[in-house]
Image 1 (cartoon, rainbow, N blue to C red):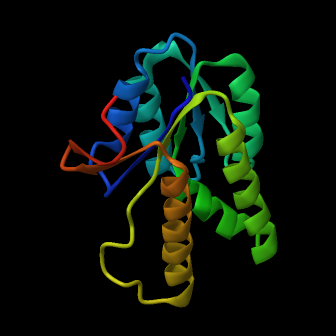
Image 2: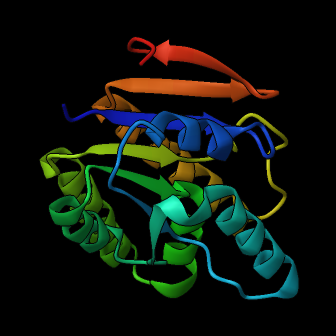
Length: 175
């Protein structure tokens, strides 16, 4: 049965580990990764995440066109983890300068989310609960990520807020 699950929370709150636990019951699963190893620290994070997933996952690395990644994965896998929407939003803002082009990517992603026949678990960061950024570009990013999270949460069957490794179901029922 198809289900959309959004997992949100702060940095190091246990989001990715919780997502992996939720998808464990599926045989054919795929991990869509939006992060790119642009420096040594990010390469270390990516390596650690790959080890946490183990060999039971196929990994698709897609920093921009996640709508196509979801569509393609939906034909071959029972369940999908997409990690992370916030990183994806950063990729869009960095690489796609035209706001209407970014909005097209977002619309295509949301349509793909709705139309996929598979369970999709999405990981995102709740970045709007902290200090107001001191510059316009950072505030634009915070706002864009917040709006995206709201749109996905509206579509989701379940929304989970992770707090210090503890899942708090804020929408839907526990699986």
